[in-house]
Image (cartoon, rainbow, N blue to C red; front, side, top):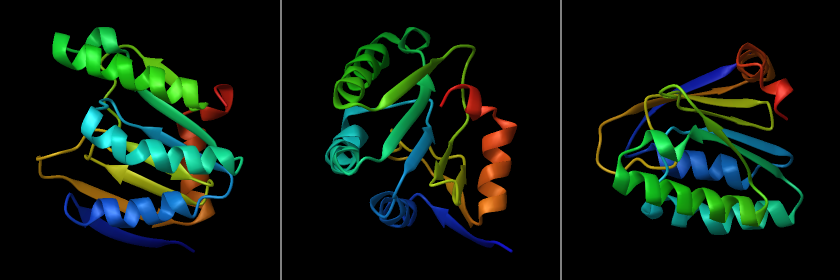
Length: 146
């Protein structure tokens, strides 16, 4: 049995950050883009979670695949994440998936770039249930990375 709900760019972050703050063990985020504006919201939250022993994994596009302005921004933020202890994986080949798995029991998926969204209109689905989260984890073969 699982629970599912839809969110847009206006309702997503409050719900998502509540899930993130309640995380006990592990967060996996796939966001092709990262920006200063969005990262500065997540940096203190990530630090709190890391201090509690939560493992955080970010899968994002290799900065070399961005335009010049985004490349520098992305590279700077990735370095900050790594210094903090967030494990960051750089993806090549036009990486574009947007999702998050929290404690392997909550799955967020849709069109919103979690670590960069600002003005665009988007949709995200939150599915609560171990089966859905594990299915995505297995489908994307995350086990070989974590």
